Length: 83
Image (cartoon, rainbow, N blue to C red; front, side, top):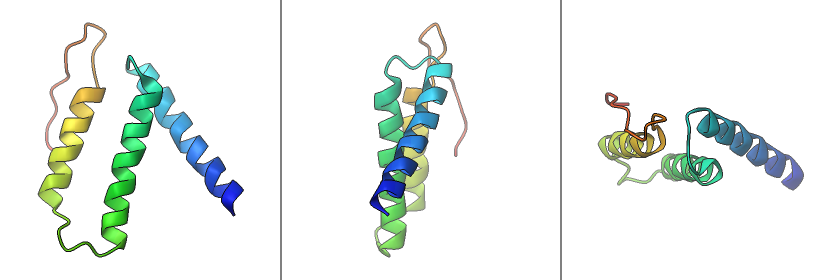
């Protein structure tokens, strides 16, 4: 079971890292981990029944995360709407 979880995590990180590379991330591995850690925290909060889980904060967090990760080749942030 531990090996299956480890393999799954490596595959997810690899896919996100490849995406980060395609969009021009200066640190694809770090960015992939940021995405995974953020979603893992959201999942944990939902599964644990966290009463302080706030959908508006989730939306703001994802917008901020994506705005820092998605950069054009010129280094300018891409504007986007709410998630």
